Image (cartoon, rainbow, N blue to C red; front, top):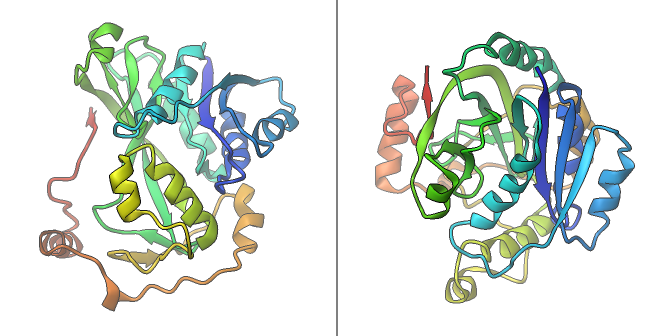
Length: 298
C-alpha cells in the first residue's frame, strides 16, 4: 500500500496559512507528498524546500486570477496535485488544515483495513472549524462537520467545486463539460481535521478575506462588500463554542503566540429565522436536518 499526500498554496505567509505545519502533520503517513505552489512572492516556495524531505515534490503553477466562478481555481490547483500522485491512496490536506498526531495511527489503520475493499472510494474525516482564534469552533450548520480527505487514486475522481471535497465522474471529458458526477462511497477514518481558516489575526484575516473573495465574486460584489481598511470583524457570527481539546503539537507555537482577543457575544448572533429554528432542533436532538453531504457512507 502506497500513500501520496497532496496540497496547494500561494503566498502562504502573506495570508497566514499554517502550510508548513499542514505538510508536516501528514508527512509520516506518506510515501510522497505533492506540493503545488502558486507563483508566490513571500518565500512560500523556499519554506517548502527548507523542509528538506525527499518525499516532497514541488509543482510550480501560475494562478489565473480571472477565474472567478465559484472558487473553481482552488479545485483546479487540487487536481494538479491529484494528477501527480502515484500512491494507492491520495491524502488531500489543505494549507489551513492540520492533522493531530494522536490520529495518525487511526488513519493508517483505516487505510490498511479498507485497502482491499474495492467498493470503498474514500475516507471521511470529522472537522474542527476554528473561529476567531484557537479557542472557539463553529458549531452551526454553516460549517461542514465532515468531509472526504483521502481518496483512491482513480483517474476519474476530481476535486469538487472549490476543492471542499471530491466526486467521481464517468470520464474526465464529462467533468470538464459540467457533469455533476456522483458522491464517493466512503467510511469514517475515526480522525479529525483541525481547520484553521478563521484563526488568523484580524488584520491578516481581513487581507485574506478581501483577496479570496475575488475568486468567488465579480467586481461589483467586491466593491460593495469588501473592506480595504480595518480589522476583520469576528463578532459577525451565528454561534461558536469553546474548544476544550488539544491542538496538534505542530501548532503549539502559533496557539501560544495568539495576541488578539475574541469573545463570543450571543446577543450579536447572526441567524436567519430558518437557521435559528434548525439550530434549535439540532441542539435539542443532535439531528442536523438537511445537512449537505457530498459523500455516501457504506
